[in-house]
Image (cartoon, rainbow, N blue to C red; front, side, top):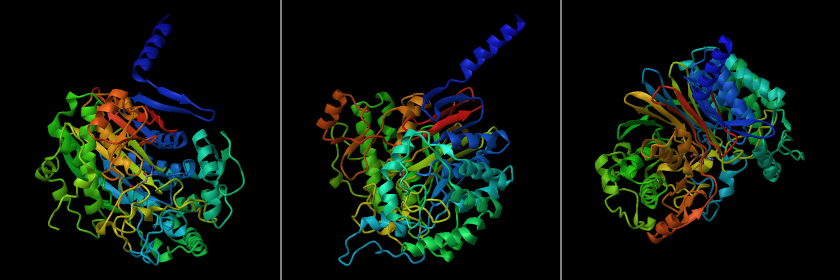
Length: 567
Ligand code: DON
């Protein structure tokens, strides 16, 4: 009797404490939302979530888990997870100290401003998007090594990499989403690769097939045993340079040796009673997330409903203005004087919204950048450890499978991040984003990004860890999740799973997910002068929200195979 009573109390406790919403597939069950006591992790793939969580259980901190997760994603999520790309990390420790790590790819020393232009000066976009010339010098291994040196609690690099070595060797079952990605890209894999590998073979993938990556396991073993040097020097570096030579790429041994991840002060802003901690240049994310939040602050968005014409119009008009500035003023601040203070100046932000008309859409042609003195794939994960340290990390090889080239004998995809530079003023990149002088190609420079790993503090305490992939839509996805939670007062789960919309100044179109606006709202937005376009999925957010009782709401986006866990 006593036992039954105890068991039912435990059951009741669990039911009220752990609410899981899951989606089943043949290979995995994807958990989309978990309420946990103090530890949480959400990533784009169940294998990566499990590996990160195991490190937390072994006493690792959020940084240890992030390192293990970054390598795990390189194995189980090759469309975006990587060691051949780069990314950004925002870290806030339990004391409130915050910093960011920039492990963005760098342009090789032989890169130059006009490298993607033909003899007539026209941009040849294919060159910056696929094949060897599209790749910047990878930063992920350098970044993880740097994070390990500075903040690891376990201080055991091998322990962090070993699970990924094992996963690559033993293999894992591929999901439905992966099947279509692997099969649909086959022609490109065949076209751009110089050596045989699993991806350009004639195998037609089906759900549940095992992906074993022996070459990648060897590369990860070299990284496990030799740290940073295992990638940027030695036989792995030789394989990268051989690959470049076979495919007319320009990355050299010296470029690899010179790669450096950089700690940067975060961009910090205030939105109502929230402190927003986000990524500085070479990401545009932090600056424009804060700019947009500050633009809408005086207009009482919380008085409207989420996805109502009034709220959507206000958000779109802030996005239009922010993205106009992005095109002109943003680039790597090590090379270009990005006017950060001016862009975040409250008087300037107010001025940008001075011509906002609550009834009528502005026209992008009429909105220029402010004047001062002077598929798709990326992946995000969010982690909170049992001490309250938090990592928000977005990493990418740019578009799906990067430049489509797997390094022969080393088994990993290289990025096509060079397309994030402005190949020529006025020529849009893959995401339709424009750029100018600030983001022109220069040797050693880092290409402008939209990645927006972000941590939100409320009353001096950790409140939200959030980020997303999605190219140009990253900043707006993070923006809308924050507004949903803190203005529309939704749960974090509803905030993440709610449909999203996006405007990026040019083209002058409100892109939206199909379920976003009802017919009345659509009509009203169109009558205000907005052009609407259904564009499929926008972003894939992984968020951890600290609830009033201190428990965590760990949320994985339903738009993909994303998986949340916690305890
Ligand atoms: O850094 C950037 O902004 C882009 N390279 C990100 C690409 C991306 O998010 C693709 N994803 N879905």
